[in-house]
Amino acid sequence: MGMLRILGPHGDTRVEWRSTEVDEIAEVSRRFDEIVEAGYLVFELDPTTREGRQVRTFDPQVSELRAFRPLAGG
Image (tube, rainbow, N blue to C red; front, side, top):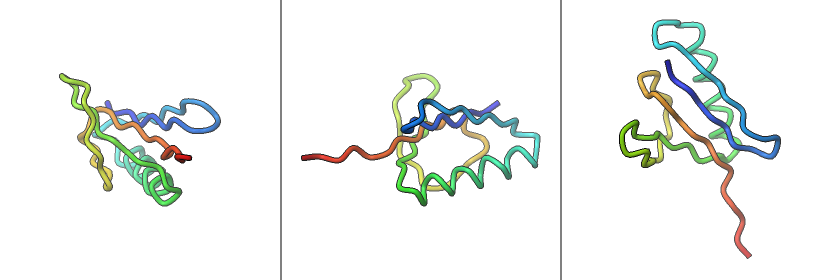
C-alpha cells in the first residue's frame, strides 16, 4: 500500500492506494498532478533511511510520498 501525504494550509491530508487497484492509482495520479501544478514539491521517502528525493511523476510502486508547498523567504 502506498500513501501520498499532502502537507498544506488545511493540515495533513493522506491519500492511500493499493498497487493492484487501477481505479485508486488513477485517482492518486490525478491528485498528484493537481498538487504539482499548484506548486507543491513532492518527495519520495526512502523506507529505510526516511530521506527524501524530489519526484515530478507519480509512481504507484512508491510506498510513501510527501508533498509540501514551498516556503516564501523574506
